[in-house]
Image 1 (cartoon, one colour):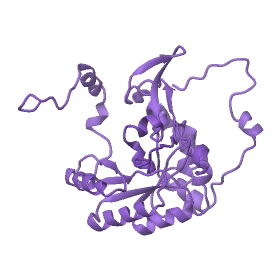
Image 2 (cartoon, rainbow, N blue to C red):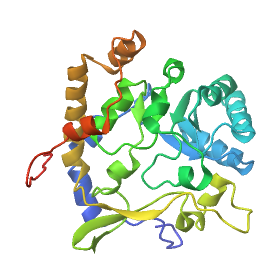
Image 3 (cartoon, helix red, strand yellow):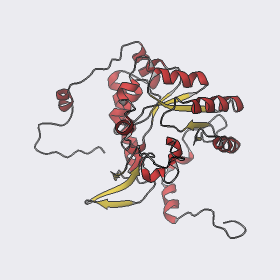
Image 4 (spheres, rainbow, N blue to C red):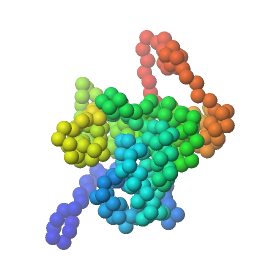
Length: 303
């Protein structure tokens, strides 16, 4: 509360109790050389974003993500060059891209990392509406994209631990986990019941609902009279707390790496580049055999 009695923040008892249940918050996490949390922030490619960038740098941000559904544009290239010229020590993550040509353009402009993926998110309709995008697995396994010299973030299509293993083993350094985390207790939004199932609302930034609240600039639609949606609003089932399913996910990824003979992320990438680790295309029948089959009924429990 400010001196003039203006309320600027509100913390509930439930939030305090929840924070007490996170013992690792005070001992671990991603920290920089100064011992402080590593913080990233998203900006656009408009002129007004340069002012936002200035404030972010003053606040101590470590990296910025240029938020664009199609990163290989003159707007993003110019913004990357501007950021690296004015703030050379600041890491810049560009994207999204799906081809080596796009990746090379952003890297040459000065991008320190790339987001790879277009139209493969669970709430994204870009491939349907605009006929633009690429299958996420094919994108990450592109023979030239594997050789990209900057860290790669696999963005889109991650819905289970197996997808994470595939993404990391095919050259990604990390993954985006939007829908994967959306149904958790810690995710924004309230639980509701839909057809007897406990769910949380999950919307795409390209949906009309999000666009009417400011995300249309990301799709160059803020000045257009007719807005074209490239996403939907949906719901994801309750996944309880991240404290339960993230430890399971981490261990599943470790076991996946163990099975392919990789002791670390770098080891997996080395195996890939040396062609020891190979990708095999599976038929529809092979995919059926790779899952649970031949049972009258079954219950799948992960943890």
